[in-house]
Length: 342
Image (tube, rainbow, N blue to C red):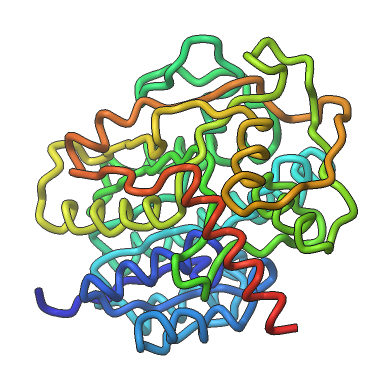
């Protein structure tokens, strides 16, 4: 196919960088907007080593409408925008809700304004399974009603989805909302992966940080949940599978394969894994012993969630290719790469 330009916000972040790799490998030209507040500039080098392409990144804050508009205007011939630019840590959002409301909502308002002004035809939004809230009926389907959001981060995703639903009837754009479950792992090359910022608490990078000696111990937050081993249940899906779904969604939107103005897809494996099972998998796959202990439940966490991914399989022709062992193996390979660069 001929080269098509895509603007990726948050492109130097975890999922954004993996998606850029997938887009480039599928023939797209990619422009990134990322202020690097939650990313590492060396990500550009990692993407280049994998793809042979040096990505242009604009180091600007999406909450600055004028500067965001300047970039989109410069690349108004883009076929689409993929919007990742958001803070994403649940516990941090509980402790700093205003930062999340400002960053996640303002950035989305601004990039949507730009998409409307310059008539960017295809818009892919990075959403989250947290929009469903604390639910009891599993698995979760795309039409599962939203429950009460468990944290400010979840509420920001609900609000952003609602904004898109409100503007879509009169918009010239078509929209795809991708609701991730628990992205984890790293690129198989080990060149890019998830950086754990100072306040981050995502399980898999915490595990690898403990294994590498950057953290003293891993605390299992809650062992009294009504699950098979007392720890919370999540649907861990490999980040490379998540990345591919964005390319598929964009391509199908460009090919006018979607019947609705807004399409929504769950991205998960469809399998619930407990926190303890994830820890044991890491230990077994990498032949390592982790230092962990139990602690109280963490505010903002839900008990259990896992997806139905049948719609993504059927409509996007998307299939998760990597299992939990691949997640733990690639995450540790990425962590070891970081160790060699220090």
